[in-house]
Image (spheres, helix red, strand yellow):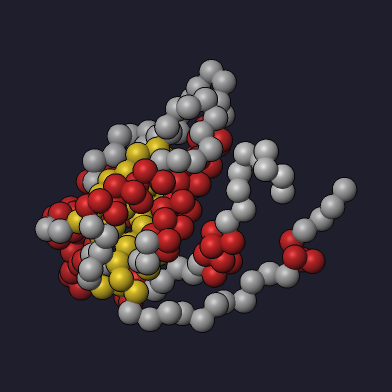
Amino acid sequence: MTDSAVFKSSPETIALLSTRRSSRVLDLVEPGPSAEELDTILTIGARVPDHGKLAPWRFIVIEGEGRARAGELLAEARALSDPGVADTHLDDERRRFLRAPLVVAVVSRAAPHVKIPEYEQLLSAAASCQNILVACAALGYGATWLTEWTTYDANARAALGLDEFERFVGFIYIGTATQKLEDRPRPSLATVVTRF
């Protein structure tokens, strides 16, 4: 690399990206990120490729007592979507966001646009999820990106305040990881890379 290079080498970043691993949601405990750390995480989450500078995503921070309130709304949504649902499942919904100290819902605002395909807008939101995971790891927190039924259910989306055209890209559960997981098998490059 020459002195005139715009970007500088960062072995620490390569090491982080080479070893980052999602935590199990049940392994995430207090403390979660501080307010300042959360601002850093969300700032990095918003620093993604964004063709047209549309910011076609937004974040819903579910924290503190808001986790129980959001869970109650999900239980009501689940009952609407599945009138025969068992009470035990509704109790699970009430506790859904209590599984970690903090949850960030990433919402896609992808919509028809004169120049920018909706698919590209959705990909920008997915990139935001990945940036949030990496930022959490860099700050020493465990995190996992889940979708679950809430991502696909219209009643759940409405209950948590999404506009009709908005969709969840996922829920990122964040906290202090109680254990480090062994790395899972990764594909060999020979099976996923082709060259022209």
